[in-house]
Image (cartoon, rainbow, N blue to C red):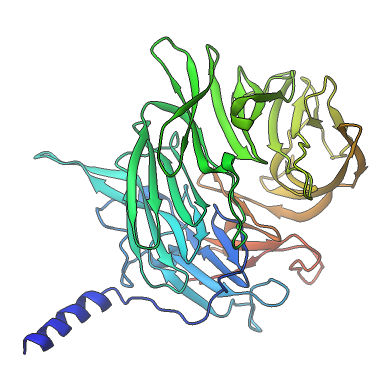
Length: 477
């Protein structure tokens, strides 16, 4: 009787939430594409946050629970197997097929982030908490970090923030077999959560930080080891004398090393291409070899204000280094505003930037840079008579000659999508992987915004008039 009672109790715990266990899945050796957004691909499986919710709608503690009876499962994380063209399989009515729920937790919200690291999918999810004490109050807009195996089993809560806002941030990196969740919380603490298959530990690395950056790791190749520069978290603090100091500290733990100090503001931007990018006095630099080599990209200042300022770079993207065995710096693609017109330029440290003669219909409207990969970049132009935006792709070629890169080919802007909106509740949510990009859009008259996928290559979804369109990829209410 004791054994039967134990089995019954254990079964109640195990199956009360309708535990998920899916068959099939990607191979261990498959490459991961698109970590860090609302969708990520491994092999021929697409994992995605199905729909978007405003976390302000979560007003009760434990609203967003891991349970099949949760009212928020439409906003959960799902997976589907892609066909040979990398598309979602549809039936004759255009409805996505073979869509399976992976986690009951909310995946689509303002701070969405899905990451595949090893055998797990790591994700952030919103939650509502409460303050302690006799006069406790409800606290909304908090962020929790969970993980689940790629077949839906093994769900774990890893770390909860106690304060979070738009000034905070986080990233997830997979370095030499260990996953690190790096968080700047609402109290300006830098938290690192160290996750292996069997153990999870969190540590406060620093306090009163003003910025941080870790390795920009959108894609993960099986068995690829990390270079030394990518094994650190980099962060800045402002000391009592109002000086800004940049430090680095091993993700695995250890001693923090001072790298740069200045009376002007230092703000970290990215760790990419084997370099650490940061702004100093509103100009962009990078450092390599532990800070012994520093490169200035342009004498032109980057405008960090909300309105455009004449004579500044108003938007920029760091280009991928040249493809191949060499680690060569191709520079930064920027949008320069002269007070009247906007133009595309590549800054690579020289006194004169390379002007890209990209023809757009109205150069008095600021383009918005969306993404860059290899020798392509993507941008949007807002139409003057509508709220929607077109998405363009430009192919270019930079050739290394005599210790410098020269522009040797520039394609015409090609429209990828003629009209779409990437904003939900005034939050811009556009996610890219190597072949696709994703946005949240409402379906017909629905109040819910569902994730929609557009193809970048020539096998894009098209309508009866051959216009490029997107495809809803998951469960629709």
